[in-house]
Length: 307
Image 1 (cartoon, rainbow, N blue to C red):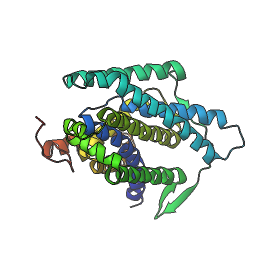
Image 2 (image 1 turned 90 degrees about the vertical axis):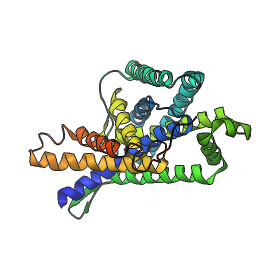
Image 3 (image 1 turned 120 degrees about the horizontal axis):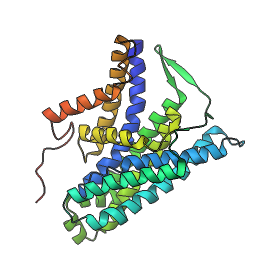
């Protein structure tokens, strides 16, 4: 039971990060039917920028919480600018092109961002300064740290805030109208280009915060860290139902829990030989099973392609 509860806590922490990143994928897909494979690199940029700010302020007299907050406040606008630039320069000219063209472009942007990060921050893994005191709490024999609590609470607040924005504001109504039918939304006076650009910006801001959470949780950042993280978050979005906000949240949480339980129990049975090394396999096996029996995802709707 101790192992189960501990892995549930670890899975909730990891799943919260997956859910936040998956929201970026599902928002863009819901608006323009585009899988932005460069979103993982936006998360990486956020982690790298936060690392630079946190490292620069680590030797000052500022409280650790303010230093991390400064890293977040620096990473968010940088990632928002990157997200806007991607949409404006790379994706907008290809909006009417066949679907394969923007998909290949997204992969190309991903490679470009990786190599830009390589030039700026080098190829070596960057260790985050351990400025936050390690505070842990015993919960039924399992241990949950202050960083894990902060990650889970921050993720929940961002997911709730995004949901309220989409379903309770005029901007959210415009986003949903654009998602349903861009042509009709344009005829109703909605600035389609502005709404699509705003969607990329919001997704990039979420990715920036997720990058800071990953960096502070694992204590390391690397220019390739966005590849696998982005792939898992995309899998979480597909698992829950791509284009569905609630599905992205559910898929992220489930993916994190499955991965943590698989690593914990399989690792325990094999003296930790296979659990940690093959933890990625468990998540993708579940994804394959869901796609076989429910291709639209857990919360996705079975709808036909638009005419």
